Image 1: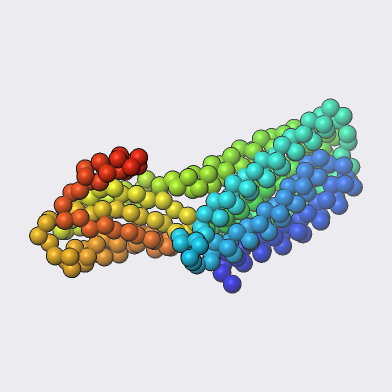
Image 2: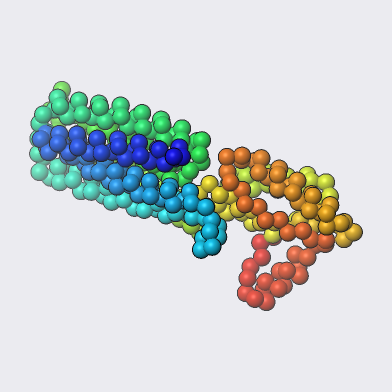
Length: 305
């Protein structure tokens, strides 16, 4: 079993535990913050289960139907996770405004505070674990999950603060006020997840820093006189690179191929954790203008360096 798959199983298990505890205490105490946190943990469970499905499918090798693999399912998971988190934030916002309007008291503060302390400890440990896995695997699903649970950690901290304030001051509105602030933060975090997922689905290029290093590798390679049509994109942990390298007309195919292999090897060293799929076209002269005219003829757009 891969590390990222283990991570989704661990996060699902933590979510189940927190849902049961928070839901029971939230109903008993009447705290909108605890109840909202229970709902959020329930959504966490649904998201973690979907992430397990996404990771399992993304790891499948390329085949005759999916020639480039299924890496983009990670981006789909991120978008769906962001949508679910947004719905969670909107629900918390609604419950908080209802709390302000009706000013219902919060009871059983002792057990509520205890539950939130347990939740913070469990969620904090999970965030550290997911961050480690995300750093090692560069998996977008795990990265999204880590950010999601980090949001939970901060919201749980805010809930704990509100319960402590109520315990010592009887200022019940703090529960609803912090609930609104939590909702706003959750929705903001969800937007970032959705944005990143959508960009991957739209074949956004690799990070500017990585593209700059790719160009540096090509430009510093002896024997390459020029290059054009450098294109990059990513899907999960797969990094795709297409480029045309220009040589002198008298170079042998064997030598040009050797240089191309050398460029490919150096590009892969930029990020050894990624799975690079590099397609290098060898040109004996700069044919970018000819190719561009052909693309315009057929309604395509050339991407030059």
